[in-house]
Length: 195
Image 1: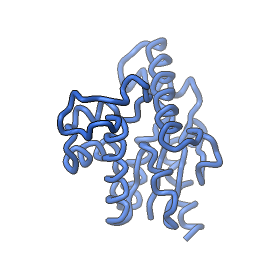
Image 2 (image 1 turned 180 degrees about the horizontal axis):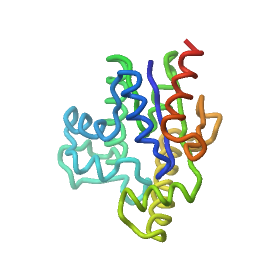
Image 3 (image 1 turned 180 degrees about the vertical axis):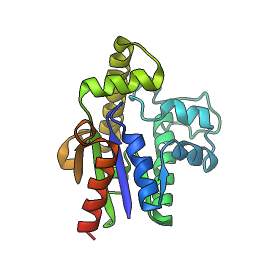
Image 4 (image 1 turned 90 degrees about the horizontal axis):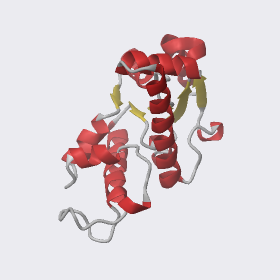
């Protein structure tokens, strides 16, 4: 059982993934993917974090600044490849949940895959980010727009698909309508009915 959760910023996607992990008794990988990628490659964690689900700029594609990197291969490609390799490796080790990082696309050939997209109403996402990051309403709106723009660009670049488009997922859930517990119950029910 492999579950991937893509999410809008502020939609409680990470919280849903963690609650689902507890409910199913399986591991959840989010920022841990960055740690694993750094451990299993010659790329430092700070560098991987700086590219993690960020918009791809044509100005970042080539580098000679990092001697351990393959010359001529874009740094962003090497960082993404390191993360994608980790996702495949962890999926092969057993049941788990992945948050973001194109995991739904990377693992698309697997028969045991459930792909979920979490969205939310704008006012709820703003309130979530204001509470979580202790920022103003205007700052929360700006952060939501920026993070979702980055995620969309990142997804498009590596998958050539549209992030959040329903046909790319098995389930699209509005967390504003059913909350974290409701989302966990819907995902569990879906998995049970599709065994």
